[in-house]
Every structure is written in structure tokens, then in C-alpha cells.
Amino acid sequence: MTDQDLYALLGVPRDADADTIKKAYRRLARQLHPDVNPDPATQERFKEVSRAYEILSDPQKRAAYDRGGDVFAGPGGFGPGFSFTDIMDAFFGGQAAGQSRGPRPRSHRGQDALIRMEVSLAEAAFGVTRELKVDTAVLCTTCHGEGTSPGTHPVPCETCRGTGEVAHVQRSFLGEIRTLRPCSACRGYGTLIPDPCRECSGDGRVRARRSITVKIPAGVDTGTRVQLAAQGEVGPGGGPAGDLYVEVHVTPHPVFTRDGTDLHCTVTVPMTAAALGTTLTLPTLEADVEQGAGTGVETEFQLDVRPGTQSGSEHTLRGRGVPGLRGGRGDLVVTVVVDTPTRLDPRQEELLRELAAIRGEEKPDGKVAPGSRPSMFGRIRDAFNGH
Image (cartoon, rainbow, N blue to C red):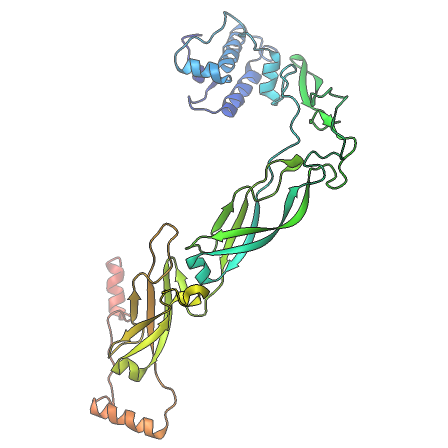
């Protein structure tokens, strides 16, 4: 037995977790148990499998085995402390009598809470501090989380005598098995509350509205969650509070759209300005920040539209976009759209026709740029070439 690989005996890898080891032993024990298969060789293998499970199910013994130490307590049969109740623990996931876990505490950590908050694009870019009203479970000020009326205290449960567990006996093919289960009278707490607090009905907490200060960092975007530790729900029995998560939703901006840390906007200019060139004064996102005025922050910039600017051309202003959560700042990309007039008075039409005559553009032929739809022969050639 000492020369055999315990992991191979159970048919599990060496990095198998406790649950995998238990399932493997449970499967083999059903196949090899003497009540099912009385063959002497099978009984011997059952003992080997059981001893392997004894070692690998115990973290300390498993660690010693992995290091190459001697973890077998004695010859033959099962090692000390390994009994039929241990086998049943592997089969049914129960707890053997005599291995009490004790009463479970009434106090538990509270749940995390989630609220959604709308912010403007400027607030998301440069950060903002808000006061929020939230409805959460808070500590009951009458019983201070104990759940009892003033002047009273929990009393030990007579059914389980304060242990929170009661023994149950069941019969199986291995004989009589005793297991421990949570006491139904006290629900495993080991104590009863004969006179619950009227304010919280024994829960140790009540629901209330309170104000909290939320600081949204610069650079957040829609879907970003800001964590506020211990600002969530107070737990049952006055347990510690969970965390509060504030999920940010950025409202649309009338001028700018956002792409990561870059900002985009479109400016429309007349065709005369596009042809002759001009200088435009445009706002920056800082113009939306109330405290921007008088603080030296530029709330506008000058955009030079060069003569001959074509519709769709882009101008990039470095470092005028949205700050990143980890530093840096994106760009502001301005797209120029040339506005072609749709209605002309007689004088305007006369001037445009005169300009067209001067430029020789009365009957333009048009220009076909690369990237237009290929011809039939071009498509056939591309098909044969695998494009």
C-alpha cells in the first residue's frame, strides 16, 4: 500500500480539489463495498481505496503525503479516526455525530446594494461630488442589532440545549448512522428570542432613508461602478454592512459625442467660408463646468478653417478630450461639413454662374475616384484570384 499512488487508486489528478476526491471515493466505495462485492480481492481493494481517501481528504495528511512523509497511522483496516460515519459523510455529505460545528451566529454580513446615477458628459469627464438619498437596511437603534426588546436577551434553546444541532439516526446497508442536523426549533442558532424587538421584529435592522456623499472620479463612462465600502445593507442581527455600488450613466451631450477618451463634434460652414477660409470660435467641454469661469480654464478655442477645406475634413486638437481614469487625456476631433445652399435669389445665382464660367465649370464632367464599384470583368478577375 505504501508504494502505491493514492491519487491513482482514486483515479484523480494530483491537483484534484476536495470535492473531486470525495466524488471519486463515493463512486468506488459503491462498487467495492463488501456488502455489494464479497470477493476477498475486492474487499482488499476497498480497504486500500478507503485508506487513500482517509489520507487525501485530510488536508494535513495530504500535505504530508505530497511531501513524501509517512502518513499511515497503523497497519491494516482503516486508520485511527476513520469510521463508518466518515464513509457516510462521503456518501451523503452529512456530518457525523460527535463532530459538532456549534450554533450558527445570528449576525451576518449584509448584502451589497446597487444604485444608478445620471451625470452629464462634463461631470463624467472632470469628476463630480453628489449627495444621494438611498433606502437601505440600517442598524436598529432600539435593540442595537440584538433583536430583543429592551431589557431582555436571547435564551438557550431547550431542544438542542444551545448547540444549534440535533442528532438524527438513519439506517443504511452499513448499519445505523448518526448525523447532526440544524435544530428546527431555533433554526440552528442555539438560542431563542422570546420577546422580539417591536421596532425590527427581531431582525436587528430596519429600513431607512439616509444621505451619503458620492465622489465620482474624472474619466468615468456609462457602466462604470464606483464602490463605497460598508455603505450597503446592514446584515441580519446587526452584522457588518455590505458595499454600495454606484453605477454611472452619462446623459447625451448636445454638441459632443464620446469615443473612449476622445470627443467628437461637427461644425457646419458655408461653402464660401470653406473656399476662402475662416476662423471659428468653438466651445470646449470645460464650458459646461460651472466653476470654469474665472479659474483660468479655457472654455473655447479657435479653429482655423483653411481656404479650400473639403466637406468631411477633420481637425484634431490634442489633449482636449476626456481625461482617462489612469491618467492622460484624449483628443477633440472636429469634423467640418460644407453647407451647400439650396435656395438662391436671382443675384446669387447670377454670381455663381459667373464664377462657374470663370473657372470653366459650366458643364463639369465629374471625377471618378478609386474605390468605385468594379466592372463586371474586374469582379470576375477578383473571383478567380480569390479576392
